[in-house]
Image (cartoon, rainbow, N blue to C red; front, top):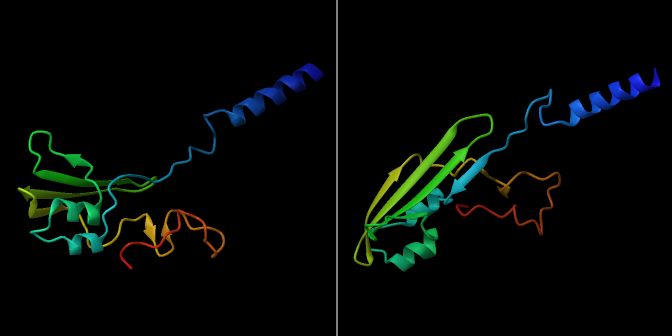
Length: 140
């Protein structure tokens, strides 16, 4: 009888801690690409140099391999239990100057991962000094 209870207990414990949990799988939001805020897009204008664009927006995620005059800033947010948000900002240069700006997606509001507290999850306390995830958003 003792052997049977040990086997049942061990089997139950292994089942509960295995990857196939009864309670479901934890998911989290997955953000990839360039973080582009509305303030950044408002400051872009034709005639800026490549260096000015890099200073404002950072390095582009994609540079066209056969056409060095096109940069793409791509943002993709796969919400754990929700929708997928995609944004793309295509910048075309003529020589060293920005010639055209083509947005795809909604740049009128910041991405969903940016809250009033900053980038990242909200902490339990309001004192977030020293936490690099809770920086102020760029558009305030």
